[in-house]
Image 1 (cartoon, rainbow, N blue to C red):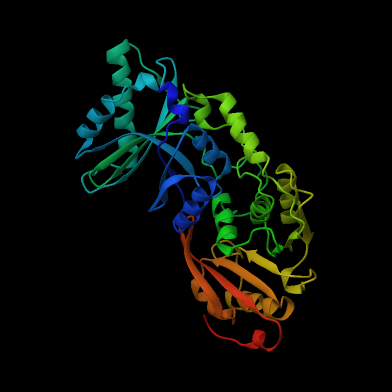
Image 2: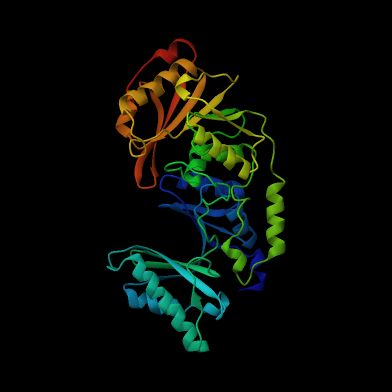
Length: 392
């Protein structure tokens, strides 16, 4: 790679979950990215090597950060093979190293699935080395030295180096989980979509293993999302600059602040409370977050000032509950016990929202795994306005 690349801008792509593209684009602009452009489940941008490191450490709603090394038109598997063969792979991978391939295919030209595309790409790289060096690197799906990402969209193929490795939702703090825990990237996206910045109180009244609380606390205190990660894939790259990495890391750590507002979680299950507390300790956030064994339906607003309530209630898919009664109790508890607050809730049971009995002031379409969801906002007014009821 070019020795001067440390200070040269190049194109990158950060992938994300459906519905979070705008949030990720906003994150990138605030970090200092250039030429930020949204696409479906991804955002492209430009920056230098230091920014690639910064993006991996700091982005909250990115799943992985890719560095494209070749983009071209292809029409079948043989075109793909030839395109990969034309890349000078020794610039990125040693013949004695290991690699893995990930592929995404969205094209009518290719009847084969992404697994076959991965195999075809793997053969092209292996054959390249075998022809040039009479030896080939091995495949290692778990801990490769270099991970290559192949993305085919209609006639266009983009071949990238995956700078992240493991998905960036794996923050490194979650050792204990409940049934169907919320993805860390989605949790951070919900907090950012709510507009919460740490300048008011925050409550997750059904906190489960504490993921939303932890993401909210990191946002409130300006703690980089992936500061607890043990490894990024770019650390294996031939041009990895360890000194630059620590300069970038230190600059992000210097921006950490202490938010003085309360961040609290409730759960009626003692096992969930224990797991949440352990994960909060893992994230080094125990001084900022409190978790209590409380049934939300028996709780009241005990904190003064503006409060954001944000939660991921159990869906019918996760727990066997009476949907109508459960959602009606959510609405009644919010209306009577939390006046003067702003409540946000994500659910895949979109029909159940009519039982809440409160008017939504915002509805956002999102995905939680394979489930179509709505992220809804309720303004809980003091006084007479809180008694107004309407089906959303």
